[in-house]
Amino acid sequence: MTRGGTSRQELPPPLPPEQRTVGQLVAETLNLYRRHFWASLALGLGPAAAAVGVTLVPGWWDIPFLLVVGVSLMTASYVRAVTIGVDEPLDRRPLWTGFAVGYVVFLPAPVLYWIFVLPAVVWLALFGLAVPAALLEGLGFRASLRRGFELARADLVHAIGSLATLVIVAFLTSTVLFFLLRGGSEAALAVAAFLSLLLISPILFLGAALLYYDQAARATKRRNDADVHHAHEPDRPGSADAEGEPRPASGGQS
Image (tube, rainbow, N blue to C red; front, side, top):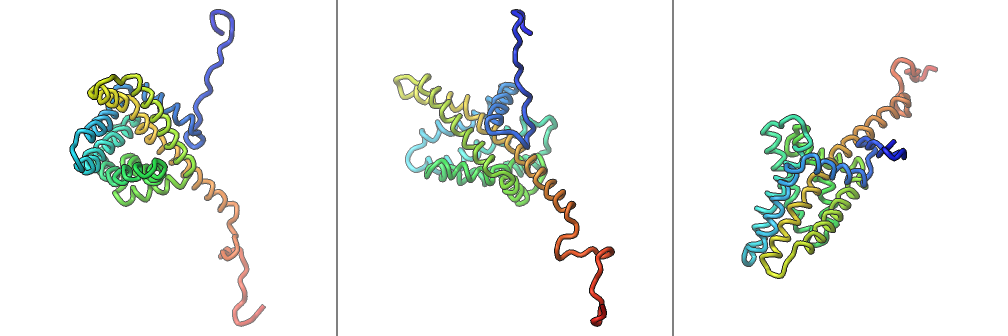
């Protein structure tokens, strides 16, 4: 009850990761951003610097700059986003493995993005979860890529839908913020682009980090359900019980 005597409806508790919807993932991403504001804000420094820097590089040098510097900065932001929600500090080896995996995963993304944004989203949904798999599960390079693909297959619709929604939310919000901040000069446009990416791009990295927990929980639930199904059918065709199932007599005897 409030002071005026009217009841205030409390928000329902968030669903567990294996049941979390796309909308709730976005809400939890914003909540994580709020709870770790300054650490999350720093995630936007890399993408913002890369976006402004690529416009300043002359000629065709912008492509190598994007593929080397831009992809490295994006990978570093993603690795840091995964560590924000972890209470315990991570060892150095998983960090380097996660960065190497992330660089390989992010490398085709700019090319796919220039073709169309959807292929880039699908690519990151299929293999992007390899980065948190390397960091949080301590897997090697190849094992992390396999694990990332396995996590994506646990609920591919949820993975693609979540990343697509995060991209749409970030794009629309950053565009509105850019037009609010822009001025008449070219320098003002660069500042507006930098600030909009600085503030909004962390949503993508934090949301992708939280998506790992959704897909890992779904993969575990899917595996447990399969084990329970097999346990209910121990005597499937072609697998006779060695002790309780009668076998044909040898030599034609009945």
